[in-house]
Length: 414
Image (tube, rainbow, N blue to C red):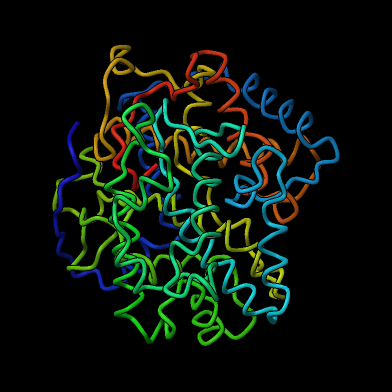
């Protein structure tokens, strides 16, 4: 398994960095790879004959799961409630004496850490809560919830267990994380070192950037948004704040004039390695985090409009849906037998095509249900349909419900 290489790309395009942090750039750059695929290049074939069956399957899953179409956003909070347990009731009771903004800050603290711990867990790992077993995203969410409840990420665990602060995150050890996730020789978790690195680095960023995080806690993101935009900030503003505030935590991969790009990758079909026009942004975890932040921020009284402007998520459940349903067909059938790193051309193309197909799927679902983009944005189509349908079809096709294309995860991308 190879690891993504670190490389700095120089450019005199002064606004390119800002552009690469936008949903507009995600759509623009992924569409280029989509067009190459349509033109017969690339590593996949798009089989149009399978498209309508896939749309119908997603509609079936939405209607079965949410017959009233009251679908929540695809966010971390749903995973925290895995198994029908209202774990948030305890959190809400303990926050009852705080004002609305402070409750939002604390929930931001909680969900930021939880999302950063949410990358592929591997097919065998599971978390045991009393007599119940949870794996993959739900298992990671339940484990992270209990770590937060116990004050693992707080320097004042006795008085403020749910509060997350930079000093404590910097001191977090691998042993503590493995204990919290019940890791053992018989219960291995993929990418432990990568997850720990993200949290340690988050601690450093919070400590070093007091202009943005005056209390060295993730919840200060709300204060920064209000300082820059008042109380009328949009979902795109929130994504930008997430990318700018937490961008330095990501492992050193590609940088642009020394600035870390995060979940942005080079594809040779778009240009040479030093060509900034060959960069393809996804920002999967950052958009997943943005979706997860909207609920507690709205609870505090902020509207956060424009959710429909964000994109889908370029990850293996959504991407796996299209492969398993036969919409995306690898030209080389043998690729399913090997692991692929996030910087490989195959994975970059798969993720790009996934986002383009998700945009198309979202539109088709909205039209079929007679709902507007504002009322039924991608965040709802993902939760009610594509992500859930991707998991269902994976379980039907493979005993371990693994993705159809194997990923060499380092715990920081998927």
